[in-house]
Image (cartoon, rainbow, N blue to C red):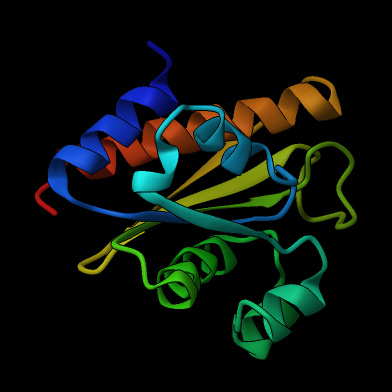
Length: 156
């Protein structure tokens, strides 16, 4: 059984819903869930907010957060928390970062932030992906799934 399948089962057992906000993963996170039969029982949806303007104008990440940098812990946390609000879900995941080359000399190539949120708290991890663009996107999705698993094991 794949991790996404196990997570959907855990969510269903706990009577929780899930939403996502994705940037550099470009929909792969949503795909991991919707590839599982019956996902619609708990998975509400995902917003692919690749452009900073979409993070700000659609997802409602604060302008000041976007201005300070969308490849950051602050942005990942905000994206997850805003996903909770947008979809009215019980849990949320977010991914933001550089799947390959960085546009910022202060941020290394392959820097990705992942956040998992519930109504009580949000956790965030920074990972560094060092393979090809698409392998890095898959790596980020797997890291997000593991982070959600940790969140579900906590007392939510």
